[in-house]
Length: 219
Image (cartoon, rainbow, N blue to C red; front, side):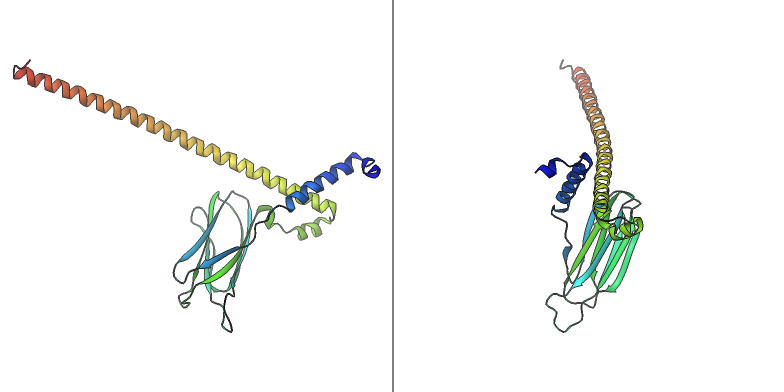
């Protein structure tokens, strides 16, 4: 314990950061998705992603109960929130797509069986975004860093990704609040107009009935 207590403040900070990074790394990681593709129809997955985020995904057909037979082929299509086609692949057993987002919203990846396949199948989809999609081996070779420095760089990247995600969520929350306030304002004006119409109709009915009874000399 004496050796630990005699460590410099910089070393202590480094150890604390490494412990924090190890805690982040040891959290449950998102594994590849297992999708069952029906023989007729489409299976889609989506993710809400902000702009300027790197997306990398690999998919392949899983050999499920197939003995001595070729793997069934599938088709894949990835679209942006505004409907732009980012990836389209047909008659394949595996594939990959990668892009940097330019629009905020839901990015949708759809898979379906080719017409010649009579039975459904399963695929494995490994979808990575942001810090998870970064090639840290290339970063380490390019910047000539390793060990503790590389781990700190990963931790810095994770913190930046969390900060950017929080800013994105705050922006989306502000947009939703504006929409909610605008909707509440419209509902309030509609309620006032409806009340005004009801009051006007009631006054007109009262005037009409008063004149009618006066003509009939009932009042």
